Length: 285
Ligand SMILES: [Zn+2]
Ligand SMILES: [Zn+2]
Image 1 (cartoon, rainbow, N blue to C red):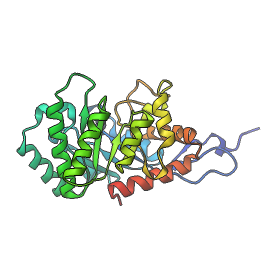
Image 2 (image 1 turned 180 degrees about the vertical axis):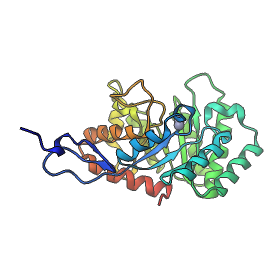
Image 3 (image 1 turned 180 degrees about the horizontal axis):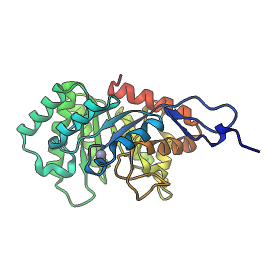
Image 4 (image 1 turned 90 degrees about the horizontal axis):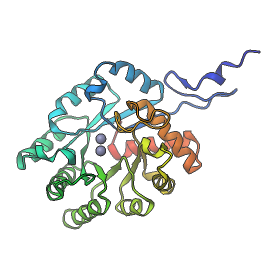
């Protein structure tokens, strides 16, 4: 006996359907943090794009690591209507920071390109013995740009939850509140609450699918629906079952599926709330 076609149909053109008599409605996902401008995608970006469209990824935010790559990111945004971007300097590249010159460069880029929807990625990365003072200064200047332009900030935070919290609280006190997202979140439940209390969104990546990521999984279960986001951070950190391979935006589906499991919600519900949140935070059309 031949099986009904729908049973084999896991990923369909333009969206995701599940097997069975009655396919579930098409879902829409937003990869809120990708680096599709990186060289590793140069050869096959059109195929990578076909796969993200097939997986139901309808919008993406390409995060900027150095202002030097911004032109290239912008050209990609011109090419792909679903692609938006940020502008900023990653905390691991603060050696490229040139004070006021860099500040103005980021400010101007964010104002002159309509598809810039966030400032960053910025933040603190103390995984190695990095220059905390300089990282703090650069982070602060990014917060100033975000505040001045009323745009959200994309916060990269590795081994630096307490230090990041201090900078944000100080900024809130002196300059005022801004919105933003803790990207590729890897903190425990207590740290997660610190940032939720500041009104920030929490974005989960492929890390949440890893077997040994118990504390992140606990954190993922407690974030309220209205603050939850998903991302790939591709080409890094591919989710299970592609762990160790090149990551790509289509795999954000595995992050959504894992969150559905951890939070005891349907995939459709996760897709609906994370997409609505991304559109609200980044003001996506
Ligand atoms: Zn990052
Ligand atoms: Zn990134």
